[in-house]
Amino acid sequence: MSRVPTLEDLGDVSGKRVLVRTDFNVPMTGPDDARTIVDDFRIRATLPTIEWLTSRGAQVVCASHLGRPKGIFVEKYSMKPVRARLATLAPGVELLENLRFNAGEEGNSPEFVASLIRGIDLYVNDAFGAAHRSHASIVGPARTLPSAAGRLLEREVEVLGNLREKPKRPFVVVLGGAKVSDKIGVIESFLQIADSLIIGGGMCFTFLAALGYPVGDSLCELDQIATCRRLMDLGKPIYLPEDIIGLDAKGRYATFGQRLPQGAKGLDIGPGSAAAFSDLILDARTVFWNGPMGMFEDDRFAAGTRTVAEAMAATKAFTVVGGGDSAAALAQFKLADEVDYVSTGGGASLELLELGDLPGLAALRGAPNVH
Ligand code: 3PG
Ligand code: MG
Image (cartoon, rainbow, N blue to C red; front, side):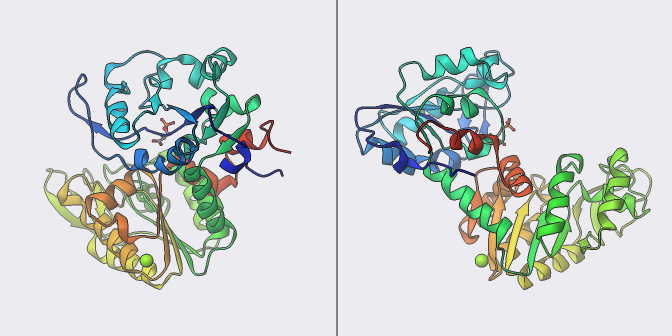
């Protein structure tokens, strides 16, 4: 397999116009016509690449998606607030309007690729969080332009690749979040590369149901119960919560064991499970965490996620947190600086760990400047 080209493979960038695909899909809040950025982590994460290029005399044109506007203009997904933030962080750098305002982006249309690279000399992909999407701006430009991975993409691939290929053991994986069906592939692959798997969050109820426990009104994917059963029979330890916190049938805060009565809804792992999961994290030498343990946005159901986040901060293990909600949880608990690596990708980090490759990386390997 040829290698993924890096910035050095672009040759002299001075005076060149460089299209940089970034993932500026940042959390926002506020009214549709006056959105403000909640966390600019993904913007700051791309600055080393932008500065590498501009300090060598390149003219940088950034392009990103924001949200899922489905091929039409949607005011709340306008890049305006991001453009304003970028102007303060990297003055003089252009930012195109939301790529997903054009259906050609997700449709990977050749015409849209052609319009993106008009007047452009070089292409850089630094959008790790979107590198698992076969969209026009991710897979198109490298077909014709000399191309490279930016510093962020390069680092993400290095850290997650090492995790996949040579983790220090024990290697513990902590998974949460709502849906099992999204994560079946990655769970199977973790059962090969990790020593044990901890499962919390909404997805734990499908596993508890597979053990024969009633789950009340908790999230549960009925069509995935048999798959969960099969995964638990593969022989690797899968740890599930033994106590659950949630709401009873009358909507009152309540603590349960592994059985949830009719009408009850599990919304966080209980303190016993959180302590047990912490111990596993503290004893590990490598930990990868993706997905919150409960509905941490609500203070009543944040304790499980907080305890896991604190264990991630306290352990001597090499700790990696994969994107999205778990990164937001770490930030909320002010622990983001206490782990070894926070990936900017959620889905992308899981797919890279599962498959060892991404469409965006394959595209770069096929670029005309790679021999
Ligand atoms: C993300 O936030 O996960 C990335 O920006 C990808 O966004 P998407 O899931 O809408 O493709
Ligand atoms: Mg540590």
